[in-house]
Picture (cartoon, helix red, strand yellow):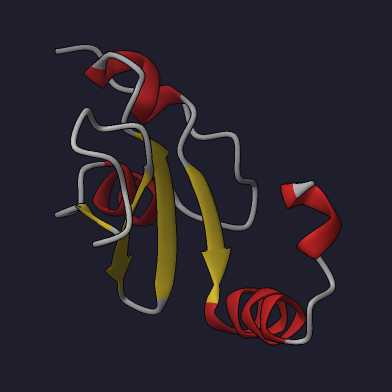
Length: 87
């Protein structure tokens, strides 16, 4: 299997590969047909993948955040900062 190129200059290839190929789980609020984001945590890095995409494309489009970035996002979501995205 071809390796997905690492687009994150602050992560070494081993860290990137570990997150991309991590054990992903999805929200209990996701739809039964897979239309949701899945996430993993590997060594303090949080990866997100889109379940609607085929495996190779999902891995190539993995988004990776550190715990501080994720904490800021969650705090903003709890504060309603992104409610406008839901209409």
